[in-house]
Length: 505
Ligand SMILES: Cc1cc2nc3c(=O)[nH]c(=O)nc-3n(C[C@H](O)[C@H](O)[C@H](O)COP(=O)(O)OP(=O)(O)OC[C@H]3O[C@@H](n4cnc5c(N)ncnc54)[C@H](O)[C@@H]3O)c2cc1C
Image 1 (cartoon, protein in one colour):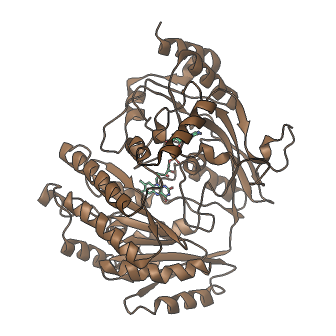
Image 2 (cartoon, helix red, strand yellow):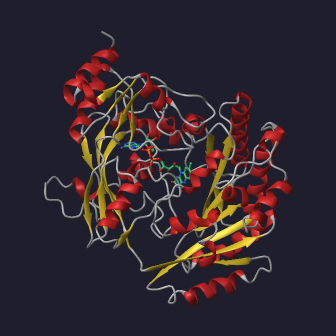
Image 3 (cartoon, protein in one colour):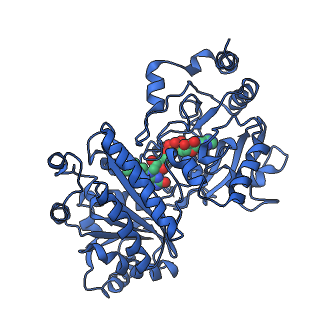
């Protein structure tokens, strides 16, 4: 019997043969992603129902030397979806059976979730409980998961935008099969009082080890929730020209540094917003070989009442009226630019491309932004996520690098800069036809070219599509890489969990 057969037989004895799939349909579905590098079919998929079943799977993998790949909800679209690092790994999908909301503490404002809990599931439960608590959501798939997204250092837009930062307390099955509880959960008693309320407990903060890594399988996580404010009032400003980005960043920074604006700023270019609603009108004419023309792009943003750039943010308070003074202050601040055009909340609610922003600032999962996947045919989608210092000159330089690469390789430049006080994450979306080999090759070349160019300026990515994990790990200093691998050896000595994920192991 092969090692895989022996492993699956042992796992079947622990979790039931029905909770293992090797059907062609499953292999195809779990191997598929939206990246240029091609599918990576797994050897099998196993569906544990509890932490002890995850432990049993990890122990069997150690015995039979099988590589596992954990998934929570597997909606990591644009970064690998539900696909493993390498073909032939066994996917451990916790979305099917480990999808319970274990606790919602309304007094202390947190939820405790298993890996398979999606944003939509948690939102529905909070509404059912009376809608007194608001979670932070991504503007991506509502079927994405609270735990998996936090582990991949995902983020949203409300004051609780930092999903790992607002998580508190994990249970992890380590690569050696042992269970670790982080933070206050490390206390060896059953009646833990502060596991999900205290972030900085005794000893080193181990939680971060389980983000963007492969040292363990997280089976439980606490997530802090904001009391739902009675009113959420968004504001938006459009700017006409591409080079206005520098001025926008200079206007946003002081409002975030003083924390006057409590949300992050979404600074989106025209195609990022219009692309959620329409397909590229020039795709057929160029056979996908050229970027949309400047005239075509301008016509699109004009038709949607937008500019080359649109800035969005939000205030939270007791009523819409109570928020009026803050709105007036922000309008006057942006009024320093004679290029800014104010779009009030009420008007934005009627504009389809701004619907995702208003929903995301309100903590409501929404699928509208997935429309970007249809901008070109073929469903290819890859995200390039460099950091950007909140400095107007740097912003325009980064724009020029990325816009230049998109255009050189015949793609349509789509970006949203998600801005905090000192730093923004640039969400550059490469949409391409995955059924066209030439477009796949160009998408790959474009990604690498942008990466090399930003590195020359000391800029790194903060998260990466799965095909580029090893590529980026090769760009770090040796001591960082060696430290990551040393931790791997300590916590997963046989290297059974997602070998190669983020270039580790
Ligand atoms: C249009 C669009 C908009 C998007 N907007 C956003 C956005 O606003 N913010 C954002 O953050 N992302 C965004 N994304 C990216 C992505 O789709 C989301 O982050 C999504 O939530 C990630 O998938 P998931 O939550 O299902 O995580 P999963 O796929 O379940 O997990 C992510 C990764 O973490 C690892 N992992 C998962 N579970 C475990 C576990 N239990 N233990 C150990 N490792 C584990 C897996 O290896 C997996 O690859 C967007 C994508 C698109 C296409």
